[in-house]
Image (cartoon, rainbow, N blue to C red):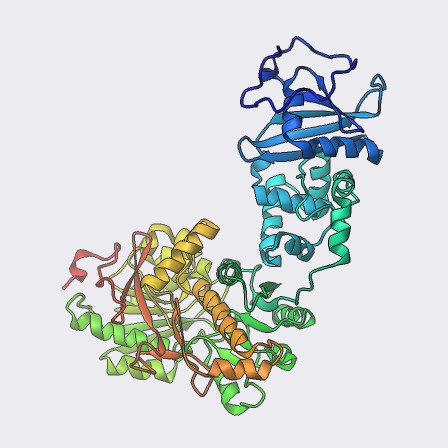
Length: 610
């Protein structure tokens, strides 16, 4: 008896033992691949021992593929096959030599793992990509979103070391990085040999399905303009991933009345007015049902014009008093534009409130009650407003210096040097790019003085902590919209980390996640997402509690700031003040979200304590 292949069991007696010559009858099967002959009739003949025959007879679909190759006229196919009890197997089916009595194929099988670190789902995507399908076609077959498929394609290109889909497809065919059975069948995949044999095996079933298709309505299309290139790319990734997570959750529950949501992403480079307009044009051309976006780091009142003229609801997080002014002055034109966070005027008020509270608590006794403001010219980046100056003065402090720096390429060593010379008690800095703020903090902490560094928003981006390193420890920062540490926020963070391999940042991942649920609720209520006016009216009604707080749009169609615009935390988004401690963010206020007290920065001299 031929030695038994480890793990395989006998299925039934051999179908036929014919005169086909054994190539290596004495080779132990546990050291070599298992092989068998499949005739066009579907009969299986032993080759190189009985293990291959036993395996094929336990997997009749592989037998059918072998017979189909003979019928197809192809000479060779290579692919991966999966068994629940054995894992992945590499399969090679080739036309047998002329010594066979009848047309036949040699099927060779060996257990193997997926190469290049490919996942099961990436192998499916690569197979469909090699067949010439586009992302949306792949998404339809895999019942996934086009954005999810796009992410898989990016990972595949990186793992295979290829720059293009064409290169990845060629490599897949050349090395047999394909999967049978083909996800959702071989219809439309006939350009590949595996597509041809799949159609020969399942062709009638697929034609029957095609003849009587299940009519499905178009999914809800959510357009998202996010910066996936340029200096704000890392925040754009937060936005995209937050939205993708929410969409996956909605779709896993059956979507909206059985219809899925699909994310359509347009890369909007935040420093490029033309790039932003092109992103909006791309989304309008895709006929999305709503548009979400993060922020713009460029000037121009008309940058939203393309999106506004398209007419769908727009949810943005530009954090801009200027955008609210547009709504106030022309409410008819901007009636479908919603700012999902409070404006930047609250940053100065929150800063002054923190100075007053931390000194009153006795946690810090500043040597001087003077402030320097470091700001950039971008929209929402000017902190030296009347609101800030008045709030700082009421808190018993004075603004000694205002310094405006470019949004990119600031000379942070010189800025830090001037701060040391002025010996101000606190620095309020607003630069929305993590690389820039990290550059300032490294320069300042290299020769520290007894000054509080209070940043606006930027430490919420995970990249900041990576770039700033230990210099970030002790920095205080705030955001008018941030993800809470309560059960809702914690569960969101856990799901995000599980999906993307790292925790979310503390702001825009949560915003994008909440925006999807806001729109999903409105679409479910209205029913028709193309009734843009009805969807906008629903957004104006009631409040939605998300992971970043409550979304209750006031007359300016902007979220309320707690405690500056409302004392009811169930109607507003808390102006969170946080401190970095050992690469973690701890909320210092406001109540009821406080989880820690202010502590001296690591770079302060000991006498800075009260």
